[in-house]
Amino acid sequence: MDLFELVGGPTPHPPSRIALSRRQPGAPFVETTYGDLWQRAERLADLLGNPAETPAFLPILAGKSANGIACLLAAMATGRTVSVLNPKYRAPQIAAVLEATGAPLCAVDGAGLLALRGAVRDHPRIAQTRWLLLDAGHLNRPAADAAAELRAVAPVLDLDTARSTAHPTRAGRRSVAPQAAAACLFTSGSTGQPKGVLISAADLRQRTAAEIDWFALSHRDVLLSILPFSFDVGLNQLLTALTVGAELVLLDSWLPADILSAVEQRRVTGIAAVPAIWQDMMQSGLRFDRRGRHAALRYVTISGGSLSRAHLERLPEVVDGADIFKTYGQTEAFRSTSLRPGDFARKLDSVGTPFPGVYVYVVRDDGTRCATGEAGEVVHTGLGTMLGYLGAAGHPDPNDKVRPNPFFGPDDPSPHAVFTGDTGYLDADGYLHLKGRRDSMLKILGNRVYPQEVTAQVLSLPGIRDAVVVGVPRPDGQSALVAFLVPAADSEPTVGSLRKLLNARLPAYMVPREFVFVDRIPRTATGKADPHTLVATYAAGAAHP
Image (cartoon, rainbow, N blue to C red; front, side, top):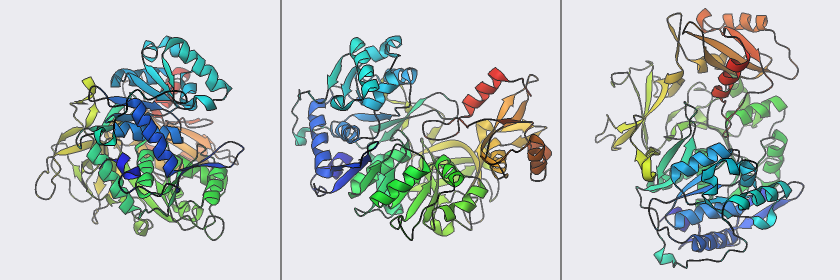
């Protein structure tokens, strides 16, 4: 049974149950029932028909909406590989995805149209693609102008007026084979170059089931969706909600006040968020009230990165005692580990133990397993292992990140392993602790330095709202640490005071050579710090340290 069938197949959720709620600017939440969502998905599946060739990709350049979600389900129902694109993408990135997937058709909504505005003529691949416009009758003026631009160069089919050209019966629909790619998520990874990560249909179903069990989800839950569906955590939250029949609250804003309001109004029970969201919440001085207006909230997650120790120590107060799940993974390996709420206080610096169905190893350069407390590369096998990166003709591309599992056997039946490129160690209790990226490790005065470790110390300093430490090349071929800092609103830290504080906490070789104050830390579409932009900006506007 595929995910499309789980939502409305032989044992559908009650048609009148609320599946989605979305706040419109200046208006109440608009609700979509499971019955309505199913009808939209059915119509889109009939409109799409079964693809003539496989693999067939359907990129969806859309915000979080009922039509966008219905389109995702329709893609699954017709045997396509779905690829949700973040509407924060720009035309060059969109064109690159279209080229990589070879998709003849791309679905787009008002938010996606804005990403194409002003650049469609400069990218031939956009003009060569057929576009399915999901909400032509509900476009604001800028989106309507962008739609007119697109129609001038490319064929555009309006969902509102389109008629099905194919009428496959449900029995004749083509589900994605278990080991075929059901989804392709694009990630910049550590190189800054987008890569398509292929996820099998079987793994997508299994990780959905594992997350339902891990967070004890049921149809009584109301989950707040603030992460994009182009991000694996956001996509999996969507699939888990639809599978159990829960309500998914669609919110585009990351502002703390908007989050608190949505949790109150919809009686939200669970939130998945990245560190930047929790940092903003702490900086705002706002917090949840689980004895009053946020009484329904039972858990939150820290996903897609970690917080400094100082932030982690404050978070339980901010969420007013709600359960905190700290998670670690990659797009290529989904959830490798998770720190359960009961272990949060005593294992604050770790990212937990292996997620259900996952095996985690720490290995030396020669492939042998590290001893307890010894740092090495983190290796992931089992649930969440990607098929590979998107290659020619839509098939997995051979690469050195997915390799035969060196620990394959009765105790670990997974045939493949993801060599994550992250460095960490396992403590005596089997909890994983991360040090940083292997490819970001620097040699400074003969010492190994992971910028992530230095960032954690900088974030713990008083008067610092946000920070990231990166290695910047020097003219002599060596690297220097540069700290980019966002001061707190009521603070004016000096370079001298920061250096003095860090000298008391770190060896001299780990103290940044230079401190650069900035208004904000640039972030990727999933909320992670973007060191590539920082280094490029620094190189363009500052002398080398």
